[in-house]
Length: 431
Ligand code: SDX
Image (tube, rainbow, N blue to C red):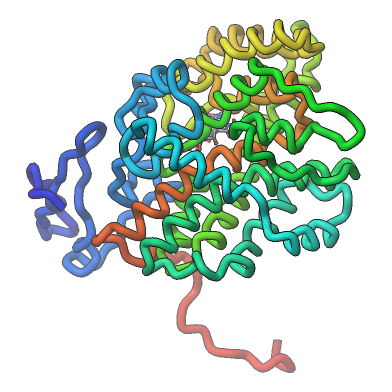
């Protein structure tokens, strides 16, 4: 680590401790408490890690107060406007924008790994047809380590590299196969002449009986959704991947752990939950009823797609997605117009409501993404698998960074113990 920029004084029961403070290239400074327990015999207490930096990272920066998101220092607005998902994958993985040769080589490498081992197909048949696609991809991704032994040795940089390429290349194929399995249609093999987003849409929607037609606007919208979901600092699923990786687990197992965590409705499952909520609200005149429920502490209902641990201003991804939603719905003439109208009116009313204003609750990345995905033909239960395939590059980039971090060690939080101690065992006949 660099030299401390200062120190913080902590007094614990009359004893004073000096703790080094390190500045960051952007965002809050950190107080280094690594020696606190050994010096003061106390733990810090931070359930949900609201004030805890668990690692150093140079990949993604978020300014929650200003609603800013940057991948390797590039503002998300510029990347959304001028880049494409696969180029952002290169940026996140290698910390630089590629020149044409570097990009062409990277694209070829990813393209050459989009197929999966033919025996992997047997895993799908073990699931019921109505299994949620997230259940399927969690299981299948975890099984990849059983097929790709030549990229599980995390101490070998070359194996780490091929594991990253394989994951980025194969997740769309695995997710598309889960969709095809759930609707009883034959799997569609990827094509080397299709670009990333187009290939995924093709694997999901082409059928042997008919000619597949690709729409550039749809591919662009899908590519943008992948790009906006690519990475997001130390969110719950990324922290899961890092924690799993800190034990030395193979990269496929770590990504499977991240997929499992992402599934929750408080995290990546919110896009599916949000579209269901917008459909349940159904019309603008029912919005006040749901706003009232969201504000009622006795009601577990929350506005899906609203609020964020870090963004206490707008989520820049939601802003970009809102604009794209209009364009896509106009293009496909989707019946989703009423749902989009409900979404926009819900956003307007909520942002004028004192409850949401005081808690700084704004639409997040999941608020509009479902509307776009639905409009381009994806069923609701495919929304989170699409979030997972988008975030795979972020997970694997953060995993790579963690493995190479000299100060990283196995993650092992402590606790504030509140249970009984030193009880004597009572034989069952005396209880
Ligand atoms: C993602 O971390 C990331 O970066 C995640 C993500 C990424 O790219 O990886 O951005 C992706 O997960 C986005 C979030 C998707 N989740 C949802 O849309 C589900 C609905 N949102 C909430 O569950 C909630 O806002 C969280 C989980 C997102 C954030 O929760 P926090 O930071 O723990 O905030 P909190 O639960 O402590 O809420 C603070 C207050 C509470 O009220 P009070 O107890 O102060 O009275 O705000 C209220 C909450 O009840 N609140 C909401 C609300 N979200 C928070 N009230 C109504 N509706 C909501 N959506």
